[in-house]
Amino acid sequence: MATAPAPTAAAPAPAAAAAAVPSASVPRGQVDLVDFIDWTGVECLNQDPAHGIANALKQGYREDEGLHLASDSDEQLLIYIPFMQVIKLHSALFKGPEEEGPKTVKLFSNREHMGFSNVNDFPPSDSVDLSSSHLLESKPVTLKYVKFQNVRSLTMFIEDNQSGADITKIQKIALYGTTLWEICD
Image 1 (spheres, one colour):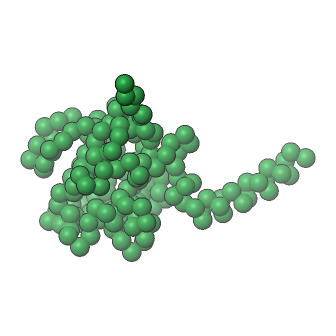
Image 2 (tube, rainbow, N blue to C red):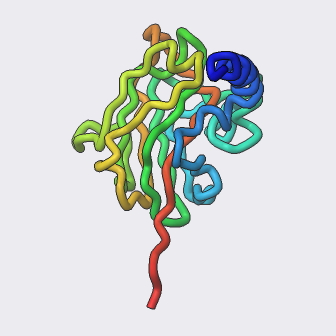
Image 3 (tube, rainbow, N blue to C red):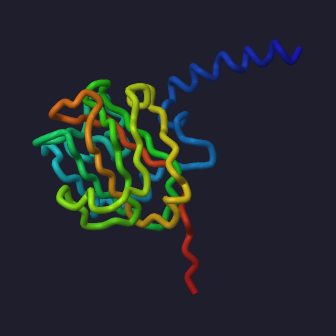
């Protein structure tokens, strides 16, 4: 008897997951941190002005398949994301085209005022090597959780893309984690 209900319950789950990819991709116990981003301080160096960071990061825009973030003069992007409160970062999701999507992403916790000239002067808090399946299937990448405690800002250096093309394109960036409530006296 237990075998019959299990397949019945399992069959609708993939259909529901396919219909609601954003909520299905949120790791258990984590939240999408988009509501905690301080949008006034978000910066992206080397972005194509016609295809800016909001296309990949903002709720609503990042779900639109026709919008994306694109690099301008070469494949590299440097993204700075401040938060309105302290967070713990658990994982990140990157969605992009199979050939032009990001490959090597270096993440820096609480590093401000970074530029292309000094980004390699600091060791990253974590570095991820994305596969094309991560980009196409919207799979979150689990980060070194202990390196992302008490995060006030996040800098992401997109070093290259899947094929070595001149332009990197990112359709969606989602950050998952939890917030820390500061106790005031």
